[in-house]
Length: 466
Image 1 (tube, rainbow, N blue to C red):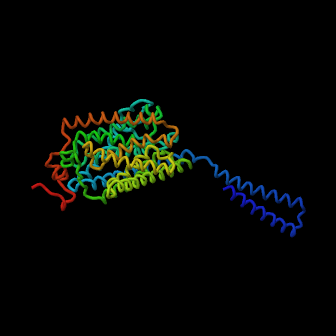
Image 2: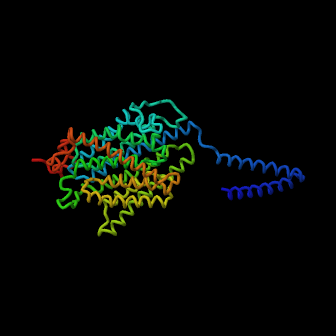
Image 3: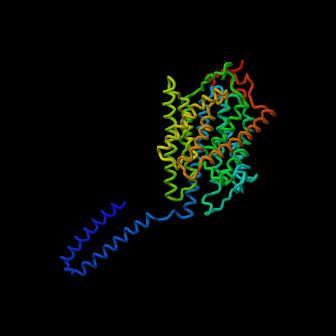
């Protein structure tokens, strides 16, 4: 900008001198008039550039414009995150066998709807209302405020909507891990409690201004708050539910129960990748200044590179350690890379983002092997992708953010793990003891589409009861 300013000024000066020489010859201007005209012209040109500089140095937009832009950010990024629900649905539908795909579709649209209602009834205020450095908010309904509050900086409804789609994401993580053998209504009951109580209490500790926030814990967009909490809830459910029939042999080895559609799973991953730009970018929580816009752009770039790093790392490592490139590990590598960068998508350099995503992807790949060794059946490998990668992403935050510390990050990981494990175990166990959570062996054999819904989505490829 500065060299352009000098060049333009030199051209202007030369033009003025040539013009004045012409005027002097034509009108016989004396030297004093010549100098006076030159000074007036240069003063005008200086004013022009001063005005340009003033425009460049202009402060952030007005309060009302910032209010509009922030609200717009929440709404647009919110519906991007909502679209992730379709991504989870497609990923899960491709990973299960064809006899269970209709149930997957019902579970995903059902859990999203239940999450929204429960977050309205109690979840939002439990997470945000009057936490003040404590452990939870208030047990009350969200009351939408339609006034334009410029001090808050955004419409109250837009914030509720943006936060609601995050809690739905947490619920979606649980769905895939327990697929093909869990009954839908006990599952929905757990989701209602998760989205109304467990997740909001966990969220209040950090995003609601609770005790972990006061301690200096950092989780920008939810590697732990969303993904690890969902992962812990899925892990407890998977342990209490047990593995699918035929998943493990008597000698402890695992069998691959292949899903019905790799293309559908891949589509789901791409949809999730797209939605993640709203997930991380919207968590900047402001679009009222040039600095905010630049931050969001940087977040988009880091988010994309982390996913790419997870994909490439899993492709390379799986090829080097096996005879073939593992498509399942590669697709999960994208998800793990996205989860890994979510705790701090703003501060890392582009190179750091690739490395974070790559390491998260490899952690997920070997986490898949670990679950098989432990005989824990996770149909879509949500636990390695969301829980394991989420823990790593949270712990690596101090590498790029000097305002955080490993000790506090570790405290947050442990605190969320203990709370979610205990709370989820209690809820799952009570539901299991009271109404049961698992389908019968016969229903599992023929698929839950027929036993739970009375219909099937792939009639040409599904064996029906005689």
